[in-house]
Image (cartoon, rainbow, N blue to C red; front, side, top):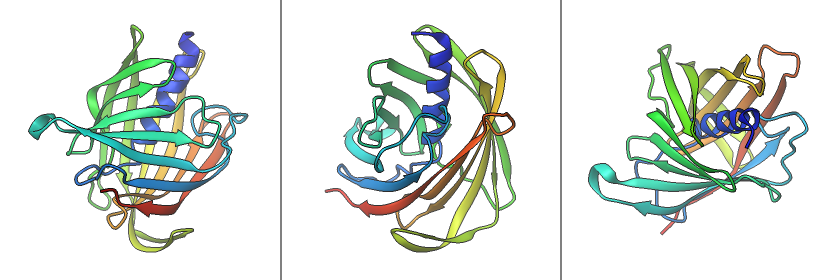
Length: 219
């Protein structure tokens, strides 16, 4: 496994999950389906997503402080790198199992929902560890003004709008920044819309958007 490919994949997985979950009372079988437009974020412009993006709770493991929700994420019908995330009841992401690649751990765990007041900003520095490599990444998250968002699943008022600037490294080890905006609503216990600008300050910049099609509760 090349370090360049690993860096790209690591950023993809952590950042996407960083805005896509709310684990406090999920049920096994709970599922979110998103219409996706554009390439797969944090990858390359040629990485297409054919079909819907899905997230589904496939298991709940442990009890008390050790309780974790197991969330499977798939990007389209031809996704060659589906991931399985382990998230605690405080919405902290601890590790990811990456199909065909291995397990990635996060130190410290990364928030999957940024609990911020309007106008509040927080910075988090973390390390991603996989295959003997330690990769630094920095998040600067700010909650903007709440907004009403209309998506295929309907109209959602007062969605929490959070913008995250992500600083990491590209496949050559050079600094790179990405920007992610997400709109979260407690009614669906997850995001309603997600917009990512990959390589925000670079010449290969591109935008990808996911909008909620449906949300079903598990058992």
